Amino acid sequence: MDADSEFEFELAVCRWAERSWDADGPILVGRQVGTRRRRFDTVIVECDPEGLRQRALFGPERIDDDLLDVVPHAPAEWAWYRDALPDPGYPWRYVRETIHRADDRGILDVRTRGNRIQIRRRWRYPDWVARIVAIENKPDLDASAADRLAAQLEFDVALALADEVWVATERAGERVPRALLEDFPVEAGVLVVDDTVETLWQPRTLTDRRPGIRILDRGGDRSAARFEYADSDWTERRREVISERVYERGWRSYLDSLRPDCRHFECVPVERGVGPHCDAYDRTPTPSQCRGACPEFTPEPPTWRTRDWPIAGGPGRGVRDVLDAQRRRERPGLEE
Ligand code: SF4
Image 1 (tube, rainbow, N blue to C red):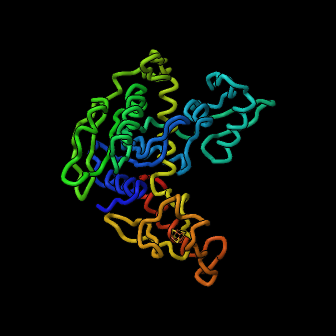
Image 2: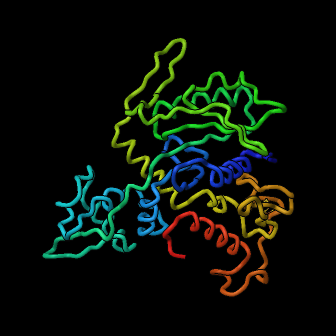
Image 3: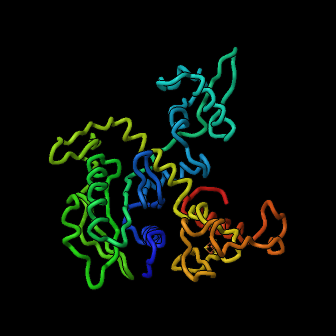
């Protein structure tokens, strides 16, 4: 595999995961998803098949952090929202805003009786996530990158937000320099991704280590390490938020950070799908290069744009539609 950029490598890992990840049920793959403090390069959500189908009833958009305070708790019968929902820990007026947003999206029944807002669930919010796997992509694993990565992996393993943590790297010449891997925590798995994918080290499941530990300071020669326990409710909520983001965005949302409206941008066939390509540079465009400031950026001319321009026409829009269709295919139950 030609991975001359981290971005290209990341897309290749996502593509491989979607095609070949070994799981008992369906999977969803996302990229650049995580918490405010930590973003994972690639995230695999292993799903319960029936739960995933049930999840589709709520539509392609994510159930965000605020909605998760409401939608899963909505009762089967009409009830005043304050009786039905757990205390959110912040003012109820924000909850009311969220209720109206859920109503607008058609994922919650809402009515007013005697000045009181009542809610009722439309469908039961399913327990659709079985496991979460996080992969850190590092194609060029030199000594300093390995050192930085070791610290990140220690943090991920201790926090146990994902059930498994992996590093994906490339072969350097004939083999991966094992000396570079020695500082990685033994709980993290190691994948070598080339034309084939080889498991160099199997990870350990982190779920049984909860509550997770948040490393605040790794310590050093002169200071002691500092850490705190991660609240299990916090962990569970972050896992739901991450899974919902993966559901909404998948990994093909890379278009949002590129310029598919440039006339040099094209999507070329790759194994089981399409991948971005720039015909001006004859390579995979990267987010840092593929933007309006790119010297070769040329907006697609209006004549390329077909019916409904500028709202829905144009090749850039066409590429987006193709990728959206692929994303929806991975989510059974979503209407076409
Ligand atoms: S020419 Fe520049 S902006 Fe256009 S597709 Fe290539 S990298 Fe992107």
